[in-house]
Image (tube, rainbow, N blue to C red; front, side):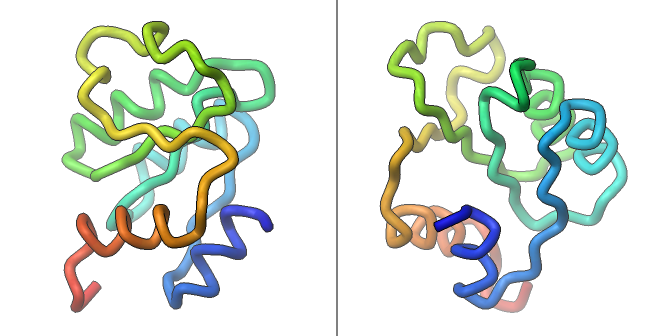
Amino acid sequence: MLIETMIEDMGWIVVGPAAQLRDAIEAAGSQALDAAVVDVNLNGEAAWEVATILRDRGVPFVFTTGYSDQAAIPRGLESAPIMGKPFQVRDLEAWLRSVVPASA
């Protein structure tokens, strides 16, 4: 199941998805977001700039990755939560509910 469908099935509105780095950077910097799910690899490009923008805006985010090497996460972003793929819907939902206020 796609992450977008998972989130919509939980009752949230999805902004995106952004499969290209430039689109993700634009959304991260300009959209009203309660939280974000950031794939480490966006069509072959690392999404560190996206995560940095979200961090600087105070938007909670979680990295998703199919890679096992978490040491590649740059300094300043290493404290972000990481969900390895494949992950369970319940894990994503638990994270979203922990960071998004009930009234959002």
